[in-house]
Length: 112
Image 1 (tube, rainbow, N blue to C red):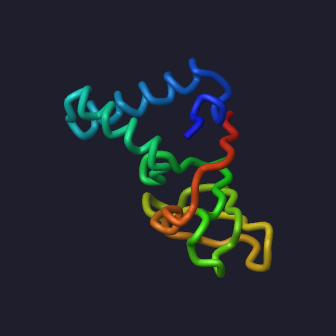
Image 2 (tube, rainbow, N blue to C red):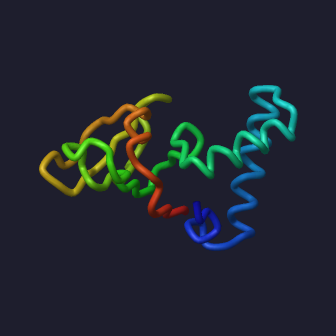
């Protein structure tokens, strides 16, 4: 994944990763090296369990269900397992489970 490109710079990518590693160390009491390995793996695999944030655009992966929308724009969270997404197509806006994003890859990340 081109995390630095998505976030605007290598510094922004490093800052995002460090913040997430810090949260895993504090909240989940993980060893810092283990947490960093998890984040690196999550970035490489486009793992939405770690990456999903509002303001992102996710594009359907090649070979996944063609009935799924091609693109999802994440507008906000509903709890920890569901997001509200706009698809720009026939379904408009709806609630999606976080797990559905495994059929997608992160394409664009607008950060405030």
